[in-house]
Image (cartoon, rainbow, N blue to C red; front, side, top):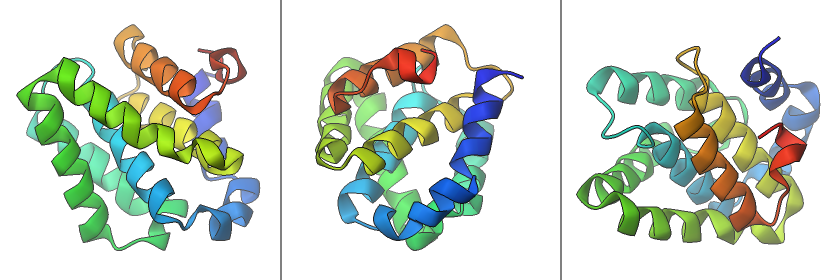
Length: 149
């Protein structure tokens, strides 16, 4: 089973779903949308199909249903705009947003799991996507090898 399949399953697992009430903060919401945008933009500006695929994953993720979809989508798009304007500069801002989830380990791990799910949503969690999720792990004080990165 591919890594992203295992992470996708764990992201919708009863354990993470049970933590759903712990994953309802604005910090988690913002960090989740930041990592979604970071992964989507890792290989360059995402096309409309990729943006729609990510939006669909956001809409159907049980944990993210704590938040209004339109709010999530707007935050995702705002991060993409920042990354598209200047990826290196935008990456710094997005990683700072992700790092805010560091204070709560359950949120930090869930953010990484969401990033992996987004990366693998097209069936190929490629090296570029893995690299940005690895950077997010470091920003959150997590060990990438805990996620097979």
